[in-house]
Length: 340
Image 1 (cartoon, rainbow, N blue to C red):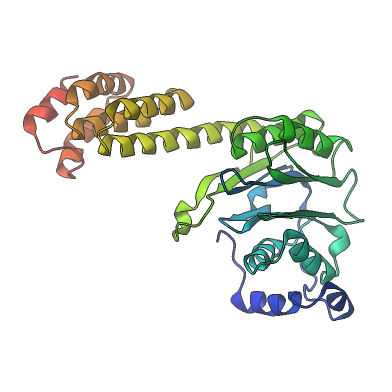
Image 2: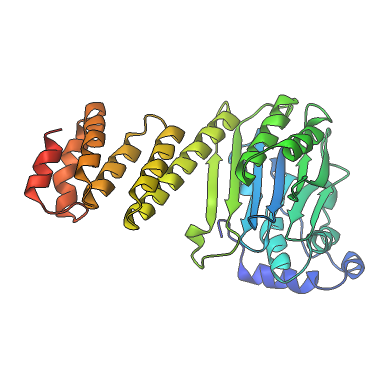
């Protein structure tokens, strides 16, 4: 998990949340008042049943806004903002992991939070979506939940916006968008900005998409995790980083295809990677190295030539790779590569 909450705190809160909502409201509040950063923003959470992936994306005039979005494979996604209590993220996921619907999880936490009127939160799991905009969130503020024509359930929410049309514009853009979940969420963010966005301007943005099921290795569970902590144009930078993420995903796929001796398919994957990140010499270099290691030196040599023309430093790596057994320890091959 990217953020830390003590196990003692989780245990205390979860025991309380599993009681009924009306009982929670009558008892001592389970979420004690905590410092609340003013993470006013617009965001989206979504679940794509066709792929099983959960996603969340956000933009704000606030430093490091990635801290407000959470997602876990097979469980759900959460966005917590306005005067944000970041504990809503792990608590919401824990409740949904225990079998609660998004509505049950959100209602339970809201009922126990004495500061709920300043919170804006959305949660989604495989069969439900829920959102809360507190009465004291700064105008313009609101949320909208829905389902796209192809069955993706989502919630969009925003506060401290220039216009009350921002979140409806996000919803409309998301429902009409094409592409995978990351692309559709990106389009929703761009629609919010085009509609006026945060009245203060812009500073940071983030996008997270997780696999349908956990791999058991948390560092491999994120399909996309891109963030811009501080930029005059965070959405433009976020889209650029998303493209680079896709490029490296294609490059990894190319490596896998080379290992399967599917050379033409591998070449197509590497070509897509290069197209997604034009001018990225690293992608070209490792494509060539992979081909050379697969006894496809004739295919690799023109690529090495292009890389060395761009930056001769890459030439110095060739003997080092042979020493590290990332290239065959073949003197004739090494000399042919270095002649390029």
